[in-house]
Image 1 (cartoon, rainbow, N blue to C red):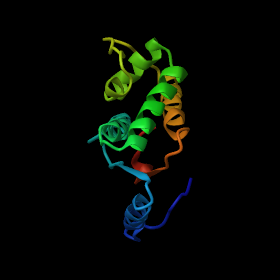
Image 2 (image 1 turned 90 degrees about the horizontal axis):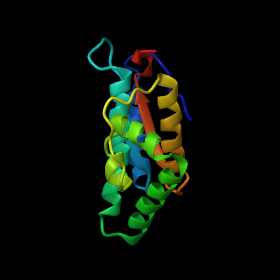
Image 3 (image 1 turned 90 degrees about the vertical axis):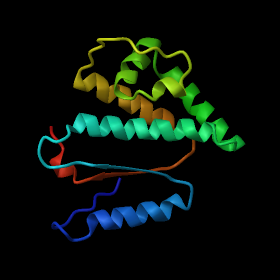
Length: 149
């Protein structure tokens, strides 16, 4: 992890964007979330969108026609299926809907309530499953100081 800090307007976001463009040339999946001041979006919504984008990208890789991308998508699906049981996957689908496209047979169940700590646990299992498959991810959390607790 790298933390870039500085005064407002010093170019931190531009630097992160430029590094993201650079590392994408080396096969990194580049994902960005921007937190905003005020209550326009909750941190939960921003993280949900970020994780859903990541999983959607992995699903799209499986449909790209490239054998290594197809294998990667399959390995991530298998790793996630091994890491979480059906109930946990169903709970995660409420937060990351594209899980249904990645893991066959996952059914979204209505009214599943997850505490913040349960969600952190599920997301850590998702990230571990993705990162354990030998692909790199460049993740930028921009203006993190505006994230709600």
